[in-house]
Length: 284
Ligand SMILES: [Zn+2]
Ligand SMILES: [Zn+2]
Image (cartoon, rainbow, N blue to C red; front, side):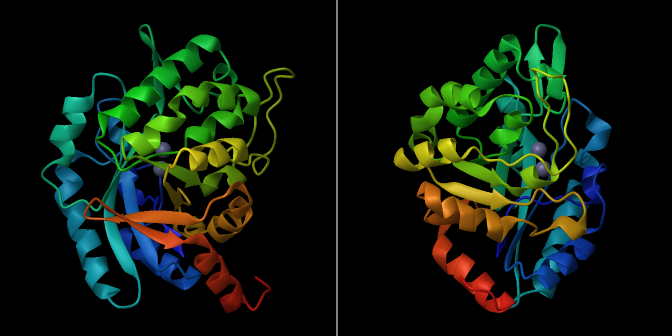
């Protein structure tokens, strides 16, 4: 099982050490684990890795990598915030480190002097927010700074799928063109959904992303995909990954990727799903 998006206590709003995350992933049957704590950033700086912690972060990962050698592959990543005009900042931040995988993520949408958070669900469907989000997303993908883009489908927590599909349409060819993978984020199954019509937010567990229609279209445009649990607690690593891969085979998804030293490695989805079912004794 591949889990390419996980957090530890280095992200401050997540739990567990690198060793605790690795142990939980190993118990769950993860065979390729990429640790992707939130990179230092100017916004909400005390809720992410500090620059002064990066050395210890990569040393912890290296130690775990050696400990699990031959049993589970452990890879070093970062989830970097992206906002327009931050390209030089990200480049400067990531260039000194021995990174396997770098994810670009939009957590804040700049709207004039305001920053709208992507978890501020009642704001997501506003056209000004969507305009700014998709402008940022286009810049993120075309910057070619990142191996993958994180959780675009988080928008589905507050925006109808038809709107997301329409907004994504002009961006579909860019992923393959610029060599940026689209992340399938399994945390959707643990999240709530806000309805802009009724103003009611559901209980956690009602969301289900990614958008199946978007994945099918991206596949037609030759995009590549990564997958991650986005675990912020060791108990969530690996959760929902095989079920999501299994379900997405209907959209045409045949291969999932992970990255070693920033180079993409493809793995057939059917093999991952088949092995997981065989281990659990269930039917494939
Ligand atoms: Zn994120
Ligand atoms: Zn994350």
